[in-house]
Image (cartoon, rainbow, N blue to C red):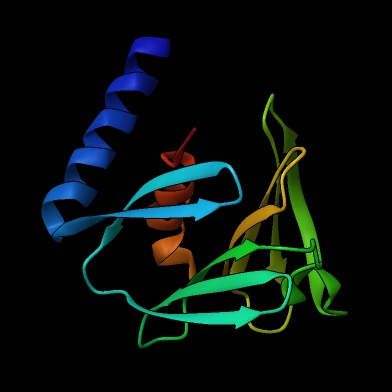
Length: 143
């Protein structure tokens, strides 16, 4: 069963990889460096403020990934009254929370990195793109 699951995951990643071009992105938050591979279709913007910055990667349909470096503020998706948490996990270096907006039926995920001023999240993700966005966040490498 494990072999079938591993094969399926590898096959899914290959399909996602060959269906669009990717670029590597390197980000730094204090002493932590992040490397991630993202589809070339993303546009980005940086919002600087006194205690840090947000780098927002977005698509035309409103789907986005937010890299937050600075004082930890709760992402808007978690504080929404229409938001429901459907899954939480705790790993050695991060905590992940996944949820859905009950009105728009779009998904969100927030990864909190322990002992860091770093939060990486995605919001407004339709069901047909959830695998792609989970793959992006799952494959982030940090130093």
